[in-house]
Amino acid sequence: MTGSYWWDLAIGIAAALLLSWLCLVVALLVVRPRGDLLREAMRILPDVVRLLRRLAADKTLPRGVRIRLWLLMAYLALPIDLVPDFIPVLGYADDAIIVAAVLRGVVRRAGIDAVRAHWPGSEDGFSALTLIAGLRRPSR
Image 1: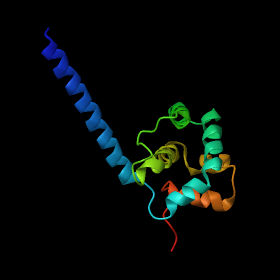
Image 2 (image 1 turned 90 degrees about the horizontal axis):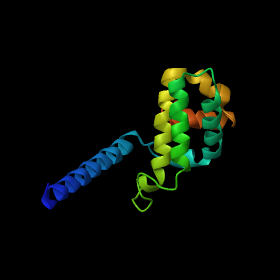
Image 3 (image 1 turned 60 degrees about the horizontal axis):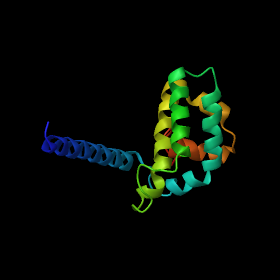
Image 4 (image 1 turned 90 degrees about the vertical axis):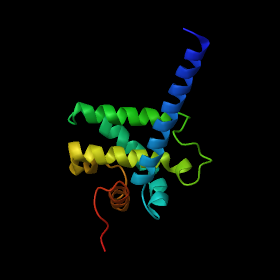
């Protein structure tokens, strides 16, 4: 094996990682909350963190749901973001977008009642959570 082989391999791996990251950024753009929902997501963030911890500790929920929630909390604890903060809109929003996507999956598997039973905040906060996470359609 020559040095050229290793360079080709390194460039191929780097290109694959870059393409994967770009696909993730596009996916985050697609599932992000619209309008003022992002600001609302930041307002209820402390309650959402407590909700995630409570749901992850609930032994009545399916194991796959609890594992996803623990992985989400580990990701949120990491100082490194998938999208750097200097990128407009997504830089600060990636955590909120990922939380919303995971909560949609939790509701699909465990039901909205499980999320409601563990919600530590106010009724207004729960309404905001369901709207932000796309768990219900906005009322007109």
